[in-house]
Image (cartoon, rainbow, N blue to C red):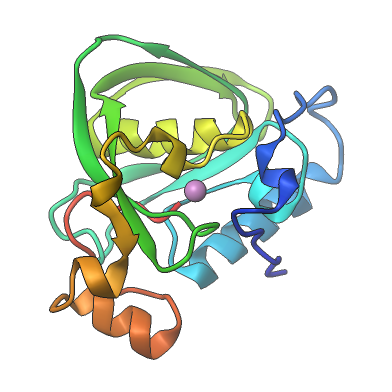
Length: 194
Ligand code: NI
């Protein structure tokens, strides 16, 4: 079932989400399925449970191939319960980000370039990985959602925050945003909508 995605300004997006106590809760599978359906319908590459009003530390992300991200390598399609993250460097890089909860806009956000992360898979097994680049960016964006942080709060230079059609007036992304109400087929490089 496609769920409504909460928009910036909704206080539920500002909560620190609760840990999942019962990994075997039979309701979790339906929530995860709804999150994937909602993310795909919206053209996103990541979604956190608080974005559909669910107060749990649960996130999904990833894509195998996407015409929207022609320059980006695949990011493993991942569901994580109770995630953790460790920064493996202090080095950051800037990249454009969008968010399904901040529709029509993009901002330039610094993110740490290399991280380790982990948590529980949807079958309850623990796992961990290292990630860099776009993969690391998507994870950090979703992890922020679980702590009540939306990407505009990470922007250092507010002159690099605006509406897609104004920032990228000649891009396919702008045309698609204008015509379809927000399902871009091709985005500028490093442009997670999550
Ligand atoms: Ni987001």
